[in-house]
View 1 (cartoon, rainbow, N blue to C red):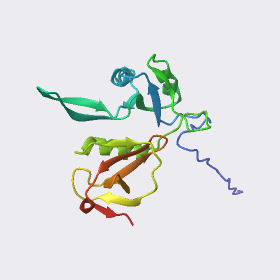
View 2 (view 1 turned 180 degrees about the vertical axis):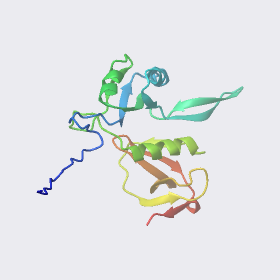
View 3 (view 1 turned 180 degrees about the horizontal axis):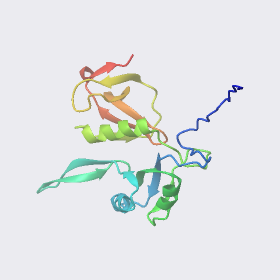
Length: 191
């Protein structure tokens, strides 16, 4: 009796590729440009289509001479974040209110916002008691910090000074920085 050994090799494929080599589309965050004042309506339509989307909204008190009213304020006008695969990316562009995807300067493919940046941004908007401001002006890098007190506890970002005020900033590729006022005693340096 003759003993033989055969070497069995297995090919390890990336998570987004099937065994027959066909690529599965991985979902990623893109920024779609929409017509002015169509952010909420477009979000509703995308939700009905089963496409994950996010419109950054903050509740603000609007003061008139005779009353106060809570209103939803769009933080980044004419933009809607969508988390899509390749087919859904095409489907979004079929909506009449959507004109295009944002791209980085000099490129033609839509710019992708990393999941970690989106998570930080959404967390900041959802839990901040202060108004979150967007700035697309160049901002020099700040010290890496973590919030240790208050409703934003756990948020990591950069400590920056804008107009003489200490703020924590979260960078979003191609859109600039989202920042919120932060007392210095509420943060610690990330080592």
